[in-house]
Length: 468
Ligand SMILES: *[C@@H]1O[C@H](CO)[C@@H](O)[C@H](O)[C@H]1NC(C)=O
Ligand SMILES: *[C@@H]1O[C@H](CO)[C@@H](O)[C@H](O)[C@H]1NC(C)=O
Ligand SMILES: *[C@@H]1O[C@H](CO)[C@@H](O)[C@H](O)[C@H]1NC(C)=O
Ligand SMILES: *[C@@H]1O[C@H](CO)[C@@H](O)[C@H](O)[C@H]1NC(C)=O
Ligand SMILES: *[C@@H]1O[C@H](CO)[C@@H](O)[C@H](O)[C@H]1NC(C)=O
Ligand SMILES: *[C@@H]1O[C@H](CO)[C@@H](O)[C@H](O)[C@H]1NC(C)=O
Ligand SMILES: *[C@@H]1O[C@H](CO)[C@@H](O)[C@H](O)[C@H]1NC(C)=O
Ligand SMILES: *[C@@H]1O[C@H](CO)[C@@H](O)[C@H](O)[C@H]1NC(C)=O
Image (cartoon, rainbow, N blue to C red):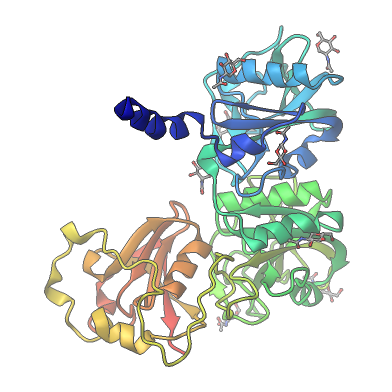
């Protein structure tokens, strides 16, 4: 008897335990089914607003519903049946290639908030769907037919937001503040970055110093370096109904007549970093140069960059990064607002260093690690207590010798920079913006004997952390 009671005590909590999301997913407008919470939003809105409005539950990277399979379809039907009065709903489904016909199912993908697209295998199209028509780019669900349709973005529909257990992240102060800004701006919180579209028109010099909507955070004109970042920028700018949005990218050589080269990611304070991610929209960049700044031409994703005269007034896109007010500043691109490390200059502890794992140890021959240049505890002592980092471009290339790596991860560029900032042993990094490959470096890339081992590769940018 005692024995079976003990077992019952062990088992019952796991049987009855609700997840946080499940516990909060209540009310007639929401349904929890198979690790997702669906929230029905009745009033009709445009698709571009639906895309940036799934913020009922912070920390879950909410997105418009992905109708992946018959089970999701059944859950969606159940949700819209419970919440009555509306007929058609947006899906997170959009065409992925404007050159491919809208009648091809595999030209449609489900988008996550970070711009990653997954082409589903399940398409419960209504009769004669999908229709042919260049503007019929967005997926929609019709309750009375329980089927999906492709319709133009110029139509309005109700919406269904989906929050997935698998996407759960800690909720940060930055995310809360970002979502709170929506009454006066359009915002999107993605990958620890708060993007804010400002409606007012400004020339470049004024816009560059105008990213001050979130006090305590490093604001600067957005740095768009990857397709994912471009998708987020496009989404938030379209949500703001502006046709262009200034970015923090400029050509610093004022005598250059070459519009293709010499572009830099800039902020009001940190050192500029060269950039080669330049997805030009049709007709750009203008020949002959002289247009020294870049704006996203919203709606032309994935070829979205247009050159603009720096004197031309334009709406602008800001980005805010952590850490927040409780910490000292890092470079323009750090990531976590929850970090509350307050290192004093005399502290030499390594307890605040989150990552020191050498993941590629198997391939690493330890022969060269004792050389001068910054490995092991020497580096930790030299670096201890630094509260600010700045990074400067060194060369395009990376180190094949994994002994020189502190760690290798697949993360965004801002995360990569922030991880280096937070790691006292990190002296720079190599980053591939195509694959998001982040190699944190235990050595100073420009120092002897390391510099000549750098393998030239246009895909990888190596930056050096400046000692301060
Ligand atoms: C729904 O969830 C909220 C937030 O957790 C809670 O305050 C409220 O009591 C719940 N309502 C019901 C009917 O469970
Ligand atoms: C999800 O919804 C379907 C259809 O209503 C139902 O059959 C299934 O039991 C639900 N699953 C869970 C885990 O609630
Ligand atoms: C749903 O489909 C039915 C049948 O085609 C149609 O009559 C109705 O107008 C559609 N509802 C909406 C809201 O589009
Ligand atoms: C888009 O579709 C066109 C025509 O089918 C094809 O030639 C092109 O490679 C596609 N582009 C991408 C990025 O898939
Ligand atoms: C975007 O989010 C999805 C879903 O969590 C994930 O699978 C994908 O790796 C993410 N992509 C990027 C570039 O972060
Ligand atoms: C969000 O805005 C409301 C109303 O202005 C305010 O009361 C609340 O403190 C804000 N929350 C955060 C996290 O800033
Ligand atoms: C700036 O551009 C001009 C014209 O192309 C070129 O001659 C000059 O070398 C460039 N200056 C720098 C510092 O790159
Ligand atoms: C940019 O605008 C300024 C002021 O309106 C003008 O003088 C200059 O010629 C323009 N640049 C180009 C390349 O058109």
